[in-house]
Structures are given as C-alpha cells and as structure tokens.
Length: 111
Image (cartoon, rainbow, N blue to C red; front, top):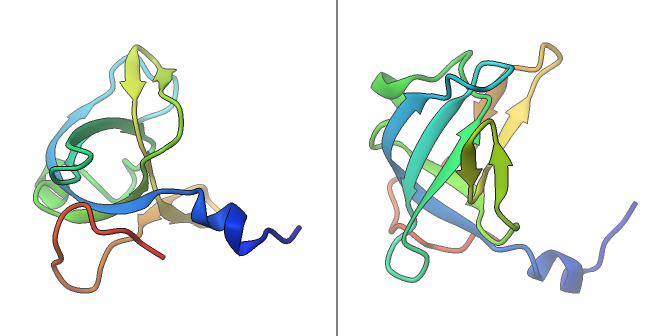
C-alpha cells in the first residue's frame, strides 16, 4: 500500500535522548519503561518498549533514539506510553533501535 507525502507529513517523528530506563514488571512480554527528552517543544515522554534483547539501562541512558511523538497515549501494562520508539525487527522479534549517526539536538524532526 502506498501513502502520499501528505499522509507521511502527518507523522511527527523526532530525535530524543534517553534519560532513564527501568523494567516494566507488569508487562506480559519483557519490556522496558524508557523516559526520553525530546527538547522544549515536546518535553520528556515515556514509552514501554519491547527492546530487552539488546538494550538495558547501561547502554540506553544518554543514547539518542527516534520515535513517533503524535500517536495517542496507550496504557501498556500500567504504563501510559506517550511515544513509539522506532526500531528494525528481525525474524526472531528482536528490535534494533533506529538512531542518528551523530549526536543532534533533541526534538529535531525526522523526514
């Protein structure tokens, strides 16, 4: 299915820096609660993400990630998830996060 550029322009994809990480103990599948700083316009947002295969607090804190910032909030195992962190999912359902190749300003739009 193809979408128009107008459709894509409605998706607010931004760069943010991970501030904190903890395990989402109520999740049915292993997940992390990630708090991300998207800069002044958007601020700090939370997400519950199934990214435990390759990531933990040691390698996520201060890492820049890319996320969709204009989805409605969703309650995931007791966590109000405010953004969708983006990653590539392999054949074993393991997620590799998308991130900028060099450090950039939090909140920059991704096109």
